[in-house]
Each structure stands twice: as structure tokens, then as C-alpha cells.
Length: 615
Figure (tube, one colour):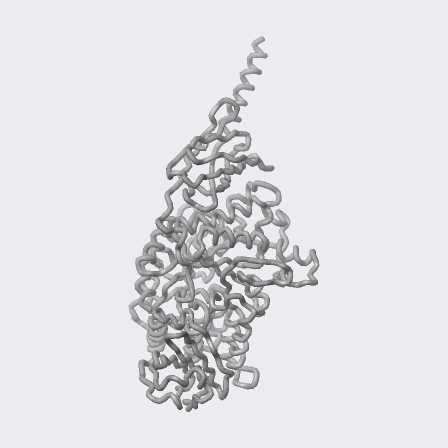
């Protein structure tokens, strides 16, 4: 009898231990908002043996639609519906095993910012400044090393953590505003708790947390608010294709198909044309889409509906929480294209004036244009992606500056690239750029020729589209003799105490660096209020004699831009431009602030650009 009682007692203890083991470690998203157009919300709950619990809640306007249990007992997916009239507040998600309450989680529904749904995304009135946060400004040295973060700071290592952070960016906004920038795109700032080479931010280990070496979620929100005070916008870099191999869920994944090819990974072929190729094999398609980007970046399976919902909600959460005006989506053609189309539609349903730019690194405009909203593709695929990075024009501009002038080289390459705009539903919404964080700096691309750099910048700031400039371009940052990303993303001069050169104060800058800061600032501050540059039509003329001429025009204004690659001043007769120049008699050249009183013949300085407001 005593033995039987002991057995029963042990069973009761075991049951109690099992009950107590059930816990809630994470709920993502950790809070949400009332008044969203999509009433549905899926919560991913992670905790030991949480799947054995039943879920209940009691809050007016919130209904528990269903609970999904998956292979891993440490996950629950809770589907809620939030009625239109639901008020902000908090309620308990109660988790119960049998008749006993196991645990609860206090869930918050917040009130949206006024006019949140109508926020205006970045557009062609903006000039975007691209920052690699770790390499820009160290505003708070106290967060360089953070307990629990695996990689410690080492500024001497080109691939190490250098200490730049969000506080440093906040402290630099007056400088950026003074140069005429109106939007800031940061390389990813979410947690990258990887053992090494984590500074770039593309190996996410927590999709809801800013890396503490950059600051906090609250500082990210503060940055957004400080930008808004200056009439500037914030663009977030997101990655749907992959996470970091040390992401918290890699040790406890919800289900077997959460990640492609796990644990025996395969590297992607990077053959991105499998999307457009009418002759593609299924084997080649899957080899590209399901492969890992690199061994430290597991490939997320967006065909898994729980993963798809997780990523879509995460992006909307950040838009609403931080107040974003745009998203730059990394490695656009690598995730499942149908999920990506669904994502763009859901984001734009919530925020109709928002903008998203995708990275399709192809020099073929037929490939790039395939993804843009409004494109009629032969395979019937439609996506609502508003913008793409214009790699074809970037490449053409670089080649145009490098190559000697001939019938089909030099400026003719730039002319031909823009002639492909018929392929795009909206070429005016493409992002144009001289370089970015993944390629040699434009100054290096053009042989460290300041004049060619200036010509290229003048083009990008006056052509159709949305210009983006990489940090440090304004002070001639370069990477001579190497394409190493750690060198390309070198520290911004003056971003660290004790720097001998300071771009913010001018201390230690060469005359050429100061001149370029002034050059960029002059064009960009003029551009801010020029509707004709933001949305005017573009007409260009076939380059002749080393001169490329194009116009931006609308009913009220006409601007003439001339690029002269010749090593001597050029006397340019303007009769061939009669259809646009005919009604004007004079102009003002804005770079040098000089009047032009006779438009019949214009003297164009050697290896220079002219931007002429016609009168």
C-alpha cells in the first residue's frame, strides 16, 4: 500500500513538473495596434511545451479565431481578429493545461499615430544618404561592447565591429540636412549576435530587436522622430531571404521546413534569371531559390505560410512602430516571388503612399523591370513592388565615365541605358546611385578622377528617379586596389574621437574634399525645391563630340544639363536643341551661380557638368 501511494505521489509530482515546465519565453509580435486595415493578427508563441496548453482571452473586439500546433511542441501560432472598433488597451493571453492556469502573457494593443496610414514614402523629391551604421559615427562608446554579444569591438580589424551606432547618426543629422539630404537609409540595424563579421547587419538573429551595439528600439524610434523634425525620412533595410546562422530559433525551429536544406545546407547558384527564363528547369529554379546565400545565412522558406505571415507582420510592425517612410528589401529575387508579391500588396494596403525599393542586381533592364508594379509579364506574374535599384544605369554611368568616347562607348553607353526606360512601368520611381555598400566606391570606379566623380554626381542628382549617395562620397572616400567590403565600408572621418580628419568640422580635409562637400550641397539644396527635377519629363539628345545634353521640363520650368568629357572647354552650338531651348533667351548656371546671357553658344568647362535654369 505504501508503495502504491509512493507511485501515485511520484506521478502527481511528475505531472506538476510537466505543468510548471510549460512557459512563455517569446510572443512575436510582442504588441500590435488597433485600427489596422487588416484585422487579422498571428502571434508566434515560443516556450517549453507551450503546445500542450489551451489558450483563452477576454477583450472587447478581439476574438480568438484559431490556434495552430506544429511539429515542435515549444511553439503555438495564435490567430486573432481585431475588430475595427476595438479600443487600445491590454489583455491577458491565458495558457491553461487541464483545469490549471499555466501562465499568462499581457498583450498590448496600441493606438496608431495620427494619419499613420497616409504617411508619404520616399520619392523623387528626395536624396537618400546610405549609411553603414557601424562605420559612420560612434556616438556612444559605452555600447561598443555589450554583455551577451559574442563579437567584441576591434577597430583595427577591417571586418570587425568599429563602434558606430544610432546615437552617432542622430548627432550627425544637422550635417546631413545642411548638405541637402532628405532621407536616410541605414544598412540593417537589427540584432546580429554572430561570432564574427557581424558589423554589416545582414545576418539577423532577432527580427524584433535593434542590435544593442547600435542602441535600442527606443533610440531607433528617436532617430525617426529627429528626422521628421527636419522634414527628413527614414528607410529601413530588411532581409526576407535569410537570417543569421546563430538566430535564436536555429536551435529550436518550429517545423522541419522552416529553413531550406537544414542541416545539410546547399549554397544558392545565384542564377536569378530562373524567374524570367521561359525554358527554365525546375531543378535549376529550386537550386537558386532554396540555396543558402552563404554558409552563415540560412535560407528562410517563405512558402511556409507561418514564415510568410511572420515576415509580413514583422515589416508592418517596424513601419508602424518606428514610423518608417520606406523599406529597402535586400536580395529581392531570392525569396519566393509569390510571397513577395503578397507582401508588397499587404504593405501598400496599409500604407498606400509608402515606397519599397528592391535589390535586383542585374545589368539587364528587362530583368529588373520584371518586378515593378504595373509590369505586364508574359508569364502572368504581377508584383506590387513600387521601386527597384537601377543597377543598369549605375553600371552604364560608371562605364560612360571610364571609357574613351567612340560611336558606341563613353557617354553613348549612358544614353543607351536611359533609352531602355520603355521597359519600366515607372522609371521615375527607380533609385539611381553611383555606388553602394556592396561595390567599389564611385570615386574608385572612375580612377579617382574628381572631375569624373563630379560629372557622375551631377547626372545622378538631375536625371529621372530617386538619387541615393553612399556615406563618405562627399569627402572622396575610396578603395584603391581592392574590392574588399571592409575597406569599401571604412570609417567616416571624424566619426570617432581623436580622428585626425573630421568631415563634420572640416579639420584636416583637403581642398578637394571641401570643394566636393560644397558641390554636393549646392546641387542638393537647389534640387530640394525643384519640382521640375522631381517630376518633370526628361528629354535627352544623342551625345556628340564628348557632350551629352538632356533636359528636365514641365509647364513651368526647363532645366538644361550638359556633361562635357572633353579635357578642354567646349564651345557648344545649341541649334539642335531648338525644340526645348527655342523659347528661352538666357539662363543661370546653378553650380557656379553664373548668368548665361546668350544661349546660342554655350561654353562648357572641360570635364565638367553644367546645370542651367532656362529663362
